[in-house]
Length: 365
Image 1 (cartoon, rainbow, N blue to C red):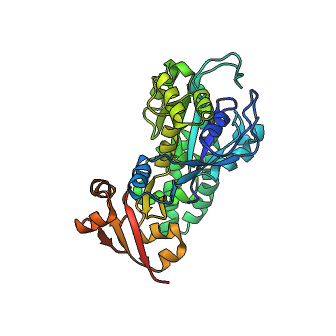
Image 2 (cartoon, one colour; image 1 turned 30 degrees about the horizontal axis):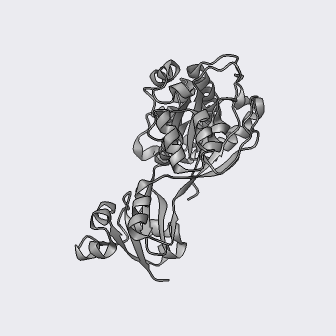
Image 3 (spheres, one colour; image 1 turned 90 degrees about the vertical axis):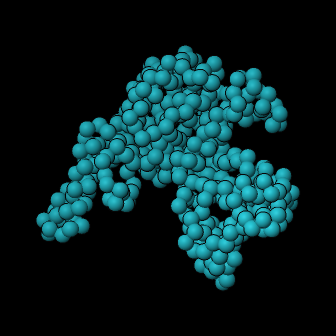
């Protein structure tokens, strides 16, 4: 799928270090502002224990996990919405993403310079917020002026557009993000078409020192308190730890290292799963002796849409889908046993794919 997350934040908060640890891309991680100027693009493999279990049961020739695209966007600074620090270019890069991972520095280190001279996660987060909000306000105000002219026609659609834009304008002028606007559900398609920066789903990632990787610290607590009323999540990661883990070659070495740090899973794994959820994605599987593979679809996708992810011909010529629930497959240990137990369902075009479905498509082109 073409969906992607963008990593944003002030310069020198650990974005590129984190990006390098979780993806196939390689960004320059340096101790000075704007080490990253062009967006770096990488693919992240989505960890899924279910894929390993299916592989164990089916014993396929190959195993293919699903992936999500991630973009490391250059550090924003105060004044970015007015073009400061190549701000217009960087904001345009954010607009092209479907969700935002906002990395906030929550560690003290005199050896790592801060663009504002001191570490304050709430202030730093607000700097980014304000720049994104100002850019959105500019977009909304232009649309608002046009809507005012159109509304003179008294056409229903023009009046409705003006109503929605008024709510958005008031929300942004009050210093809030567009996602906080009280917009009726039926009007959200109009808002989505505007592709506002502050309407994108967001995850705040607190980059902490190694000692705070498990439970966080006071800076993390302050940030959590600050965003408690936002439609957003917070997670803790130590980019330094993730960078070290990424250099370890074996699974055993990584597990041993995590155990020493008192962690059950790497921050990278947690972050990837959060990013996946942030994009409102689910996974379905195809399982055969040649290949066990995970596929990504948007939550709410129909069976033909899921088939189209494999090949457009599958969607065009869709006849039916044979669906096995993951738990049934695991408990009965094979596709044949599932069939004999009457647990394989035949579904048509209206079927909504569920996370973990194991699917086989019948089609005719």
